[in-house]
Amino acid sequence: MEEQSDGEASDSEKLALDQRFKAAIHYTVGKICTELEEEMEVTFSRHIIAVISEATYKQSGIFASDLEDFCQHAKRTTVTADDVKLLARRSGTLANHISKVHKKMKDAQVASKEKKGQKRKKTGP
Amino acid sequence: MVTKLVQRNFKDPKTKMSKEATELTAELLRIFVKEAALRSAQQAKDESSVVVEQKHFEKILPQLLLDF
Image (cartoon, rainbow over all chains, first blue to last red; front, side):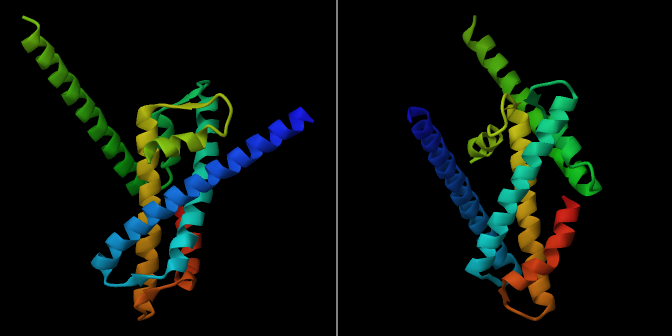
């Protein structure tokens, strides 16, 4: 009996988590659509925002399973940036864009590290 | 938002996400949504409609899924 009730609790927790993801995706899709509305001079119906959110949710599931398979294939347990690049390999421009963003991130990291190093040097002596 | 996207992956056992991978996945999903909205808007414009509706999205969905 106790085990059953535990199972139900985790099920409902999972459901609540799922709904929170969906709500978050819906909110972000709404924000992106409002940005585009001004740019394209069109209006998005509420229906389509919900539909795009659902598609995004499903797509994120596909991404997740792909990423997991990739990193398992490389005999790792942590998904790295290279796995994500592999995910985007099919379309050339998308792969380029992802690589660019990754490079930018790396540069930003190096810059922030250098800043930290400088700060330490300044405060050190 | 980014952390929530990570949590989604925790459905799978034992697999973890690096910080870089999380941010890149977020970027990928952001582009997915933007592309979906942009293509639907373009489709609606081609049909000389001001309101983007479900039927427009249905038309661009197959190509969108092939592109990702």
